[in-house]
Amino acid sequence: MRALVAAAVAVLPLASAHAWEPTKPIEIIVPFPPGGSSDQMARTIQGAIQKNELAKQPIIIVNKPAAAGGEAMLDIQKSAGDPHKLITTSSGIYMTPLATKLPVSWRDFTPVAMMAQDAFLLWVNAAKPYKTAKDFIDAARTAAPPLKTGGNGSKREDHLISVTMEQSAGVKITYVPYQGGGPSSVQLAGGHIDANMNNPAEEVANWRSGATRPLCVFSKKPLAYTQKVTADMSWADIPTCPSQGLDVTYEMLRGMFMPGKVTPEQQAFYVDLFRKVTETPEWKAYLERNALVPDFRSGQAFVDFLTEDERKHKELMGKAGFIATQ
Image 1 (cartoon, rainbow, N blue to C red):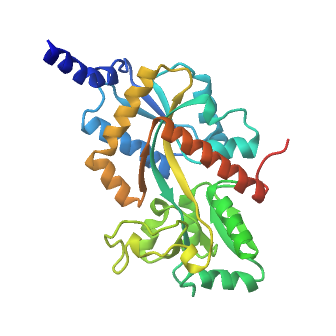
Image 2 (cartoon, one colour):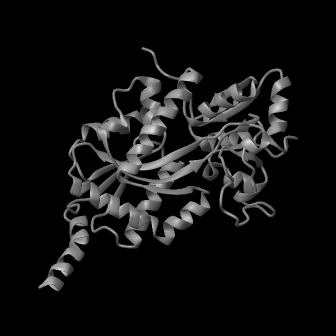
Image 3 (cartoon, rainbow, N blue to C red):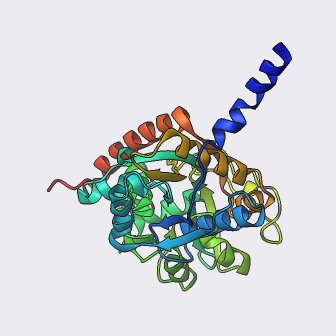
């Protein structure tokens, strides 16, 4: 009898993990245009789930980039109780409401899992003489007119890094907003701006082609990936910005959320699903290809991260003058 009881207890976690399953297609909303890094992540997840048969229902990707992702966030807010809808998002989950007074918060949602963190790098046109972050900052001190950086929209992550870099180094830089990291990369390769702060995924093609060059990564430690990306450099070979005298660090969460008012069983299904995704070869290849920092968190660990990360963004955005007052 004791053996039977022990066996029953042993299978309880598996049973409870699948106490609920989706009964119709699962919709993942991406608050950015097709082709961007968030869209790439969602489609990688979609492919990994389908190839490895991790869910019985199909995954549908829906792009809603309007209002800097605000449309997507409001959609999830209004979908309270719907367990067949999710949103993949980044630091915009704090930045858009803070910068626009949009009446929505990540606390209106159900945190499911943080899948990874995304690094940012300081990139320059390969024809420019800058070889280090110090070279770039030294040039910025005397440039007239100021050097120009570009990035993924006004009051977004790239803009925040640019202003923080100005404040930390005591220089003047002109920031030019574009409609995404792709256009910013094109403008840098064409020599129309002096630098950008793109993610690895957004700049790797131009780095491989020799059009752009990374000076440093805005992280406390170098990226872990040692496979060569160009003939002589890997992601791990790129120094950190603090090690070059530019004391600025910034990494961006990549997470999954459900609407509010779903049941614990529904939340648990997706936590288990995304944990399985991170164990697939497709996900691991995606992380290395895009030099993402592996960092899976769920439950209270994810909530604690969000709480602290939101506090940091409020502080940085306040110093940058990005927080809407009306």
